[in-house]
Image (cartoon, rainbow, N blue to C red; front, side, top):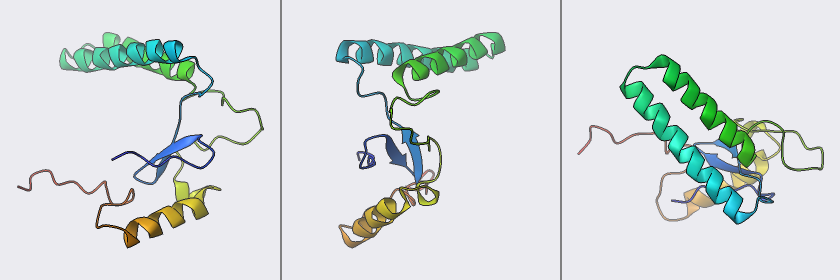
Length: 127
């Protein structure tokens, strides 16, 4: 299931929380290279954790953060209209609340699926 994106294209929503989108002004080849670096950095975090190497893990986390900043997902916002950043805020507590409420209401009227707010309920251990 694709995550809903705010009407202004700045955030996507996962379990009711806003997450900043990458800068749409990045050239496709630059974005692809950054995503490749991000995936490598995330694998480095995984591997360092498996090896219980705290120094390597910290370095890998810094690499993830650096790439996310380069993508525009963290640090200064990529838009220029002066609007504040609501990254990691709950959608219901932001100016996107009305949009999100309509999204949830439409989701409840449609085919029976989990909504972004209820998707955190896990089926782990249930067969």
